[in-house]
Length: 98
Image (tube, rainbow, N blue to C red):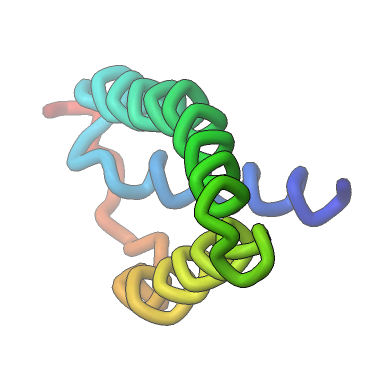
């Protein structure tokens, strides 16, 4: 549970830092929340459908859903996480005059 809380904070830092200026911070946060909502809505549907399919076809003894989800997790960790910048904050000065 602690890891989930830590990752949420880290994601929020990256979302806040990805905004080009302070005026577009609300739109950036809105887009990230929309993406999270879509994932939360489609995730259970896809997981249960995949579980049902793997049980019906007896793929890996009905446990193919876990192999697929593991592969997706590895793909996200090893392919997409490396695209995150190493340095989040840059000293841009005060951009309140934008």
